[in-house]
Image (cartoon, rainbow, N blue to C red; front, side, top):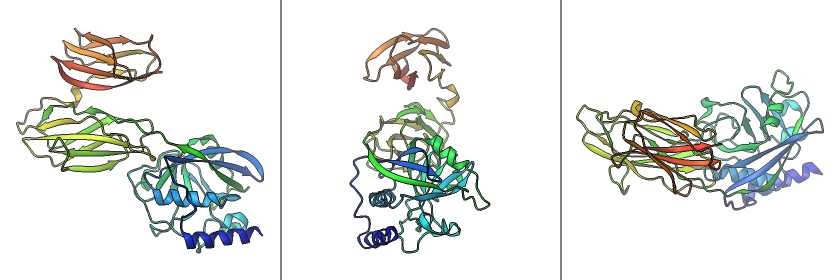
Length: 373
């Protein structure tokens, strides 16, 4: 009876595609309950990235909607790498067939992106064809950089990684199958509709000049940032682009820049469910003079960050002004420094994010984010 139900479900899914998938307002959230040899093991919560891999998310959600994953196994566990599951063969089939998949399953075309395979990332398993992903997925227990751009990232674990760690360390045979079946039961439980904050730019300082035709752009990472979209233009309105690219880190190096040219740049964050607004626009000049007016090693260093409220600013210039702002943009401290270092005490302030701005003769030198924890 159970086999008949899943056969009919496959037929419906094959005919109607992903019609059972819900409409996403953000990142859909699922609970993965696991049992080992029929005994409750624990639950892991994952959220998926429709803003990054919409077809894979729709496929997963469709399968969850008719309980496809329930009683399938995490059939492959490799310590230091990942756990893999979701093969219908692992429901009732011979263990020798687990991982081989069912040729009647619909496949999903690759949706490669700049998202990186980090610890906790959920990604699509496939065979040698890049468009062969179906129901099987894996969860990384450690970074796997060699998979970046070759496998489709479409979610991550938000809680219960300790359960994933337990699974990956299960005793296993020479084919990496756990000796005792570890089965899953997946349920949709809600949506994370959080919109990420616009990134705060870091380097090069806006208005700085350099003769180098290579510039390293850096910004402060957002806690929920998965992908950052970088735009560089010779037009402050960005009507044309020198570069428009997605990256999976909070840095990007621009090459091939032209001398005697001013470039403008901005960033926005993709958290998998929504884009942020764009950052403020900064600019830098490729001077062509052979003289750098600013070097990255000249930047002000702030430490410890995060801290309990006490921050040291080093590598200042005399007569720099430091100003601290709360998250609403209200100035809470402003001071003119007389030395190359300065200690600020904010231990009487509430925990959270604050921003600093360093200026010299009313010209901005550097800005950044500090965290009181």
